[in-house]
Length: 237
Image 1 (cartoon, rainbow, N blue to C red):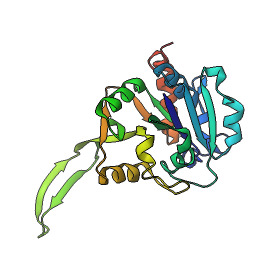
Image 2: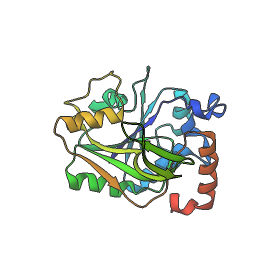
Image 3: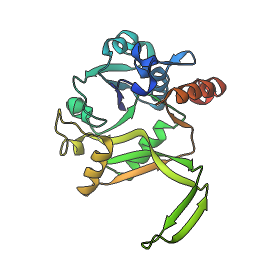
Image 4: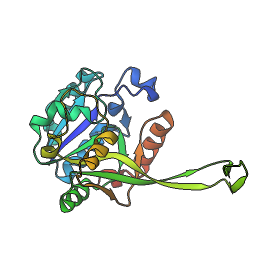
């Protein structure tokens, strides 16, 4: 199994931390965020990883080298200009065959990557999106009106439930060769909709797990606390 990990962003929402170190290399417990992910992927059966890097790319190469320390084969793809969350695939498409995983390098999750991969293959899908159920509470009374600006509904502090993308996906390289243009900017949502528009099967996968996108300073503190309290769930070995 092969995985492409997106680690080229500047992590502007986590400044000032990310002015000196890329977000995926920030420590959670005694590991960088990205090393936790790599150890999880190795446990799930991934043998080769491509790191799509840009910002401070030399630090990734210095820290992980060829991946031998983690029992993985790690190579690097340098993103010289921003290509979005799907565009970097085009730079390494000649290194990919069949189904592969693509994911963000700044997630803390207990997702079973192996189960996701097996689900994707059982569905015979062009793409599979890992999803997480997120609840959003509105701290105000929500008012809805009709066309005459009369009250239609009034809900006090409602709770809404959404399925959100976890930033972890499985894709098929052969199908992508039909739709990707190397060097062209493209985001994952646009790619998924493009595949769907072409009549390709795009599946969604959900399981009971913990997930946190480490995008802001508050998220980083939560991630550190959760990992320390529940370390065995993230790294069972």
